[in-house]
Length: 298
Image (cartoon, rainbow, N blue to C red):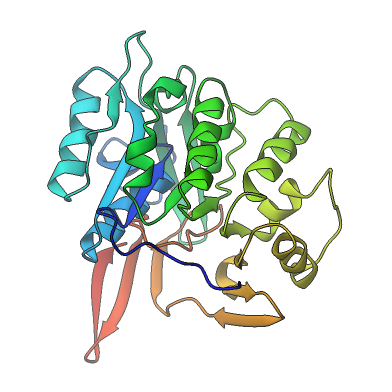
């Protein structure tokens, strides 16, 4: 069967597993981090962004993750609660782990970078004991962020969730979510990305991310070949992103559905690939509305 079946009798639309962090974006644009003096604080992390975005669209989301046992941990959990995200399975760290911090440097509309602090990161303290089979069974789908695979014990916790989801017929969405921090080598990335992707009904990633996942098993493929390869596993939808060129979703049997980026004037953007999934990725965007430009944070 090529269709993905979501059990409509389940309480939650999506459970997300992975990274919640803190992003600090400068208010004084076009300066180096050494020169910037004022920053605005946001909840960050791809799965956290997706959870917030889907909740704002009326979907019921839950989160499997760890936060630090301090005021920043309060900030994240309070934000999730304000967005209507279920935090009943979010745990406080007990051994001094801290939330990851990301500082953005914006030098021009086309030149930006990030500085991440990820040593002893709270999200990577997620443990197999934090994963509840009944909770996984309560959702129509489970999203796994690839950053959760980079270190133990988070790695084992993520795979436990994957195994429980397969047993409960909960479709798995795998967001490769490549971040070089905390990984030891490209081979290590390829092994664990591949192991998670082969269990997923939906895979999300950039061309670079698919190349990493396929490095050891099937290197050198183009988009169509990658889609066919993963359709040969369990994937029903393979989404491959190409930044400003847009994204394409591949279905079994050769179906291809492409989308271009939403037009706008970006005050700044990240150097790394844009997030395809619904989220609150922080960008300053000018959008034309009724002939006028509206400034917003995306």
